[in-house]
Image (cartoon, rainbow, N blue to C red; front, side, top):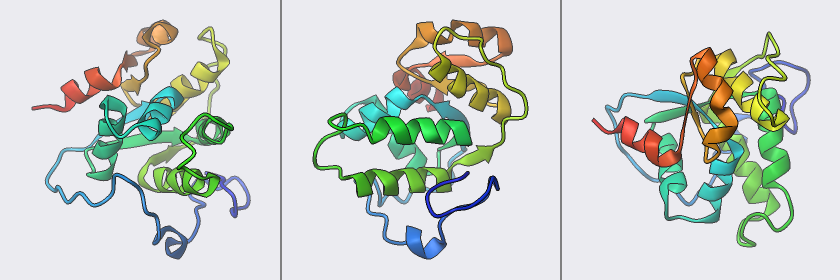
Length: 175
């Protein structure tokens, strides 16, 4: 993953552990262990919703990442999409600074499984930004995409990938 401060195309290039030490996120501090970890690709709209409000299923989904129940799967193009959208002026609450968003993204990349795209499946879906999400699912061998735009991912089922809302995915996690 190439992020600010990293050079080249090495998928394991991140900021040093020291630079991640001071991440203070509103959903940190949970200490649940012995949980089965699921892996899924998260659509940008779910991240936006989770960062906009600390109530709701998108925020609960972010909490599952913190406790180790969900590991997001990422590709470099998807991280750049996250970065471009989350840094849009006025999209997120003013209480989240650009630095907070960058720290969140650095944390997300750190805790996620990172994958290279070896074969471009584009165009398959009507929206090219949705193709980035589907490519991440295919590159990471994930069976689930978490999104609010279920209709946008109808073609994903043909490739063995199921699109679920955050609520549906959270229900899927329950024993």
